[in-house]
Length: 155
Image (spheres, rainbow, N blue to C red):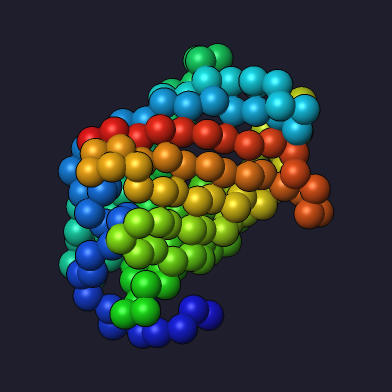
């Protein structure tokens, strides 16, 4: 469990809540473990406060024609830590956010070669200016890096 009173936390201001409130879009690349581009991705996100949790609606459109939708519910503690839930994830998402960076760890089922693997995601977002954010996600299985995602977000 994260430190801090997640359940009783109110609205907080950090990079996740300030940048993602309203609509944002992203474009990026998905690389395999050999640094070969495996897919291109476009993301549309809409974030808003619902009572004491931050809701983030995401739509992912991949170059191969696949479309995914995810809905996040994020709660924050006073110390900057966060706990999130997204129904398509394998378990809870834990991390932290401040005014310049967001870091999260989670497990997500990814289809690879006709099978589905629960991969560990090490997700970091960095402020690159008032209206721009860079995201780098490393995907691993049993501690071995199997891929990476790089996204650039704009407001």
